[in-house]
Every structure is written in structure tokens, then in C-alpha cells.
Amino acid sequence: EKKEQELFENIIKDIQDNIFKHFQTINTILKFQFFDENKIEKISNEKYFEMIFNPTKEEIKTFNKFYHFENFGIMNYSYFNKKSNISLFQKMKYYRHFRSFIQNDDLWQYLKLHNNNMILGKIILYNYKRYKFKKENLF
Image (cartoon, rainbow, N blue to C red; front, side, top):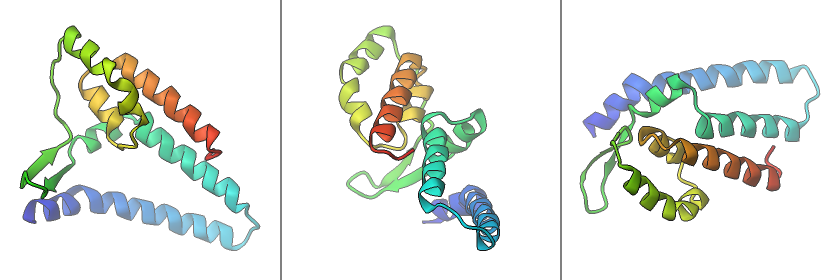
């Protein structure tokens, strides 16, 4: 799709190029030293965790630019930057189903909570996922 190609060329390609440069640097360093593969995996997992569950303002801004084509019945683009001013009642209703929401492995959970100004939800999500990552010995 043309819009997805534009997304790749305008946003994702720069991200991939930056990641590739980091891996080249890491590879250069590791060629000449002993390294503990488990330690590197844990550091990588921690960095990934922080990006997904405690993103910077710049990362949030970038994530909010993403969209994808829904080809299962909808046949339209979905955007992740949907902000809505939801009422306190709607937030309470949302929190009622929050347990199943945080147990989901959706990468966009933080963004959904952030864009709906659900601060308590972000705190709970961060701590629950951190506990889960530690329990699974991911870092």
C-alpha cells in the first residue's frame, strides 16, 4: 500500500537505520572482547521494556505517527494516535476490565492509556509488566 510505503520511508526506515548502526557498534566492540550473552540479552530486554512501558515524549510522538492497514473486514487504516477526552465514568468503566487489558501483550497499551490521560493505568501497567518481566527472569 502506498500509505504504508510512505510510513516506512518517512519514519520506520530512519528507526531501522539507527538500530542497525547500534548493532554494528555493538558487534565491533564484541569482536574483540569476551561477552556474556545472557547479560546482553537482559540489558536489551530492559531497554525494550522501558521503550514500550515508559516511553519518552519523543517516542510517544513517534508512536502516535504510526498506522496500519486493517485487512480483516475493515479494509481501512487504523491510527494509534486516537486521543479522546473520556469522562470519569468512562474511565471507571474502562478500569473495570483493566485486569484483562494489562495481561494482554499488546505493544500499544501504554500509548492507549497515555492518549486517554489514564495516569493510574500507566502506573499500574508499568509495575505489573515490570513484575512479570522480572518473574520471567527477562532482566
